[in-house]
Length: 88
Ligand SMILES: [Zn+2]
Image (cartoon, rainbow, N blue to C red):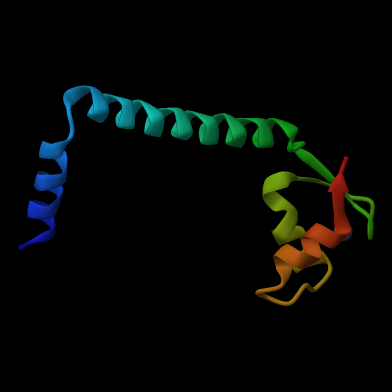
């Protein structure tokens, strides 16, 4: 028996209502995840100030800044950016 058959059997056991409830529950969880992501993005300021050289850096450029200005080792730029750049 293939996986597809398994699914088909499982679905046949469910009533239409049960299926809908399942889908709606899943949708709700997705919505929650999405709004969480939205909130996190909103809380994330666009500008960061470098504690090392007092430069203000846009969020997108944090890793490039520490790589180019502070010789952060490749692969470690994220950690260094985290340490040096604070929300402005
Ligand atoms: Zn800097």
